[in-house]
Each structure stands twice: as C-alpha cells, then as structure tokens.
Image (cartoon, rainbow, N blue to C red; front, side):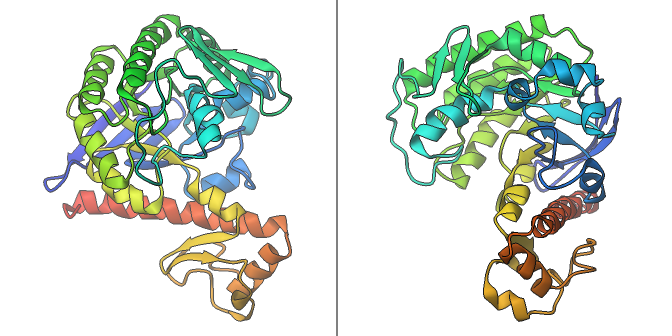
Length: 378
C-alpha cells in the first residue's frame, strides 16, 4: 500500500509539496512519471532511467497482457524483478487503449483536441477496432490481430499479477467530440466498473479511481464526487481534456475541488513542458507523458533554449554541448555535432543520448518547481 503526506501547500496557487511512500521507496511530489509501456523506458536500461532522475514509472497493462503475458511477468517475480527497477511502479488499467486503439486511432486525435471539436460521437457509436460494451471492451491486438477482452475483473487480475505498487481502476477514456448522451452513458459504465475494481482487487496494491466527464462541468463534478466517495487510495483524472490548454485548466478546477485533498492526484497522459507548470498550479501531484522519450526517438531534444531538432545539418558544425545549462552526462560529454551525426546516421546510440537528456531535463524541471513551492514562490 501507500502513504501520502502533504508537506506544504502554496499560498499563491493550488500547488502542493508532498511525499508518496511505497514499499519500493519514496517519491517527492509533484513528480513526472515517465512511461515504460512494455516494462522498458525506450532505449534506456532501468539503471540509466534511474540515473536520469526517474523515481517512478508507469507501465502499460494492455500491452504487457498482449506481450509477453502477465503470467510470464508474475513467474519472474513481478514487474520490479522482471525489468530490474528498484523504485515505485504504476500500471495503467488498459482504459486508455479503449481510446488510443479506438476513436483516437480512427480520428487521429489526442486527449486534447488540436482544434475546436463539435460533438459528433453519439451514444451507441463504436470505433472501428474496439467494441465497447457494459462488461468491458473487445480489442484487436495491434500485434497479431487476435481479439482481446478487457473488463474491470480482467484488468484487476492482470494488474495484480504484474505487481506494481499503484494500479488504476478500469475506465473508458473518452475522446474529444463526444456528445452529452454518449458521455452520460460512458460515465455510468465507468462508475460501475470502479466499484467492481474495488471488489475484485486481491493484491496488496494501492488503487486509484479515475474521474471522467469530458468537457461537461456537471458531469466532471458528478464523477469527482462519486469516485472520491469510494475507498480509493488516490485519484486519476482521465478522459479527453477539452479543445485547448485553457479548457484543461477549467476541467482540473471543476474536478479538484471535489476530490479528497488528503489523497494523491494523477493526471493521466498529460505532461508536455508547457503543461507542467499550469497543471501543478492546479494541484496535480503526479502526471505521465511520453513526450521526452517520443521526441528523442524523433531526434528532438528539449533544452533551455527550446526544442532542438538534431536531424538538421546545421548542428553538424556546432561544437557546443547540447544544453549549456544542463548537468546531465550527455551535455557534459558530447557536442551537438556528434549527437547530430548519430541521429542523422540512424545510430541507436544517438536516440539513447537524447532520451537520457530529455528525461533528465524534465525531471530537473519538476525538481525546480518543487523548490519554488518550498520557497513560497510558486
């Protein structure tokens, strides 16, 4: 199980400084949670992820169920032993794949719409590759096309076998563009699944309930009140988060005020650099995002001077460190010229260096915010 202690609350925002204690160690909050979808932070070893400042990771229940299967992980002694990660771990519920392999894939959209999205996904409509029913969701495996069923009971069993410190209740992650009737039906389903997850959880793991409601204020508030009334150890804020970042902040404001303030809050799937300060100001304690690893694999580094695309030939003649202000091993060792050469040559080592730097940069960025909260300036 977990313990969560709030060390300080900001006087100028809703930000808070805390400590999350698990059987695999402690995490200072607010904290960035890097994604280790298939029991690996892509291109890095577990030791390298730790050296980059990562203190907690989140793995993907659906993908690990599909490959290699939770039975193999359990026989290896659980995820911590399987991937040789000594620190705290989370697993998502599989609910995000209801969105990402469903309407997200069909429409080419993310959790925050890139443009104003009028309601067009109506009650009773299903995406092409996912059938959503009252008992769960039927998927087509992205690897071999086989049918996979995942419901609240199955999610709890899989996550129990994986053995992370913190697990999430199974939910339906809705896309931008759902109409009210769709969201009302989905919310009823997610709330029913939340109760089943609490009943079905067998292992000594902490469990977070997930609030939903799309961009409808009354539904967001209803969901937050309902999930907070149940004996969850913490909360996830899920689903689509509006058409823009301003709407996301509104959704967080509607939600946070109805959640038990003594429990940790995790924002699911949001955490670009320009998101981090604003969501922490709204009281988020934990948040996960693939941005640092995804951008690195596409040759892009996050730096104090902005994003740098190391695929550009201009960097081949640049002898400066990647980021003059960064203290990571990559910036202390290699030039932009060398890193650009590796990336342009398709060398995996280049992607490893950028991933390490990006994770170090994100973790250091959040560490800086924690210091500001402690000093009363955030």
